Amino acid sequence: MEKIALRIKNWIRQNPKEAIILGVILLVATFLRLYRISEYMTFLGDEGRDVIIVRRLLVDFDPILIGPGTSIGNMYLGPLYYYLMAPALALAGLSPVGPAVQIALLGVATVFFVWYLARCPSFHLGNLEVLAGRQMEVVSGCRRGPRLHPSIPLFGAFTFSGDRVFLASNLFKSEENG
Image 1 (cartoon, helix red, strand yellow):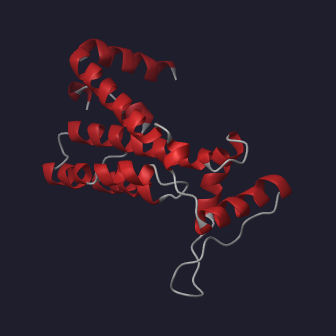
Image 2 (cartoon, one colour):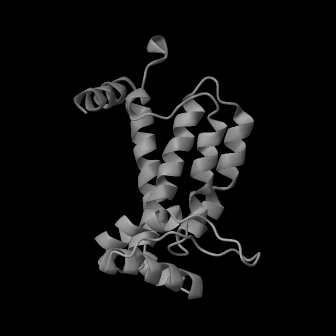
């Protein structure tokens, strides 16, 4: 952990303007996603069903073995969605605002990861345009409520990164070191 903190400090010293610009962009992204989120998020039938199911996991310790149903009929997704929602719901005291904040923070992580990928020499500009072009949709999607669909661009960014693996230890590596 100390190595990562040292790398971040060194990167900030070497790139003060970029660090300030990145900080401002991340602050604006966070503000746009979290400002009055409890008032603007939607909480309808599907979200309520999902929160009730995760509540049963947290309160009754009832394991979830099947995920949400799809619109196709008797087809279900895996339960990973519910398990990803559980920590945020627990931290928020079983309030649906918790998972909505989690999704908003995933949107901020998407902004950071798009910046990180744009700095990679092997990253194609066309991929950045695809990711950046969806940012307004991501901002509005992050304010809708506790559904994981706004995180799709984040995982898309991981896909676009190709052979580059996103590890915290590789962040802020200088071009001389690889």
